[in-house]
Amino acid sequence: MTEGVSREDVWKRLKGIMHPEIDSNLVDLGMIKDVDIVGKRVTVILALPFPWVPLRDKLIHLVEENLTEMGKDVEVDVKLVEMSQKERSKFFTMARKLWKL
Image (cartoon, rainbow, N blue to C red; front, side, top):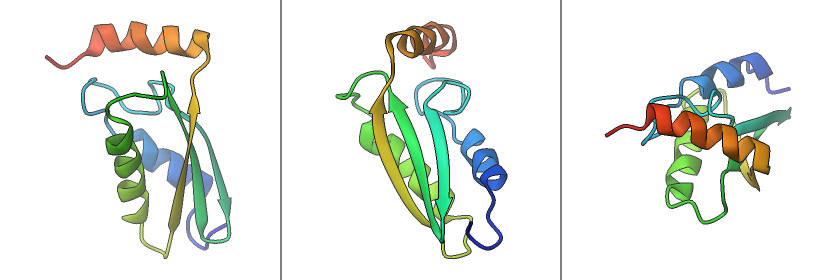
């Protein structure tokens, strides 16, 4: 584990990242599937409702930027996966209720 950075620290930081178009954070939307810390590298599994999401690069940047701001020489690796049908359905139900107009 990276010195001074725990999984809890990373999850807390990720919970503070708001989706740019939905009034909710990425964790509550089910977009963060897992976090792994090996040495100073933090790997985040980011789930997208479909691979061609227009905000894909923006979401990756938000995760990388927020975690590197933790300092402590953190290296961030974001791996993309596609949501399952069940996860996608839950995501879109939440998105419809919380969409920023």
